[in-house]
Length: 151
Image (cartoon, rainbow, N blue to C red; front, side):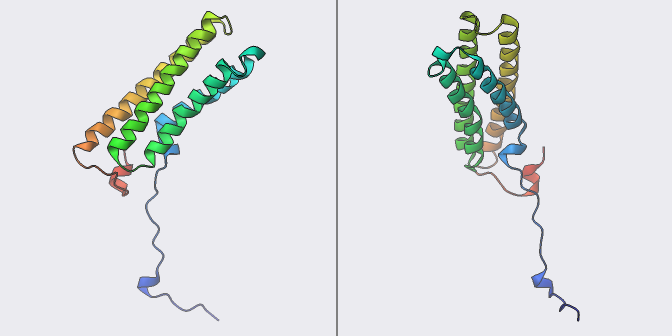
């Protein structure tokens, strides 16, 4: 026995692929940086466990969480506000890497390499903020259809 033929109105329409915050380059680069910060935090002296290490982990999580939360707002000014918070957390991490360097918790070359990665993430964040500010002129809401998901 064959299944009854579906009427045209019953056809399943596959929606366009929706890009999540995980698809954003800024999130991917920030996430990779967060992972490196967590590794560094684990190597800090025991007496820094609840001080500097904890603060580094919190700032690293704030970096990626603000990108995710802003993306979920679907309103460009809100997204920008969360990205600015993320950028602030990133700059806090850069200063914490300076502390690690100053206190000889990291070798200078390691601290400098991490700071270079941080400034690269900073540049990507700034580019995304500029992009969203440009979109404000056209709309105050994120549009969830393919033309907005490209590029």
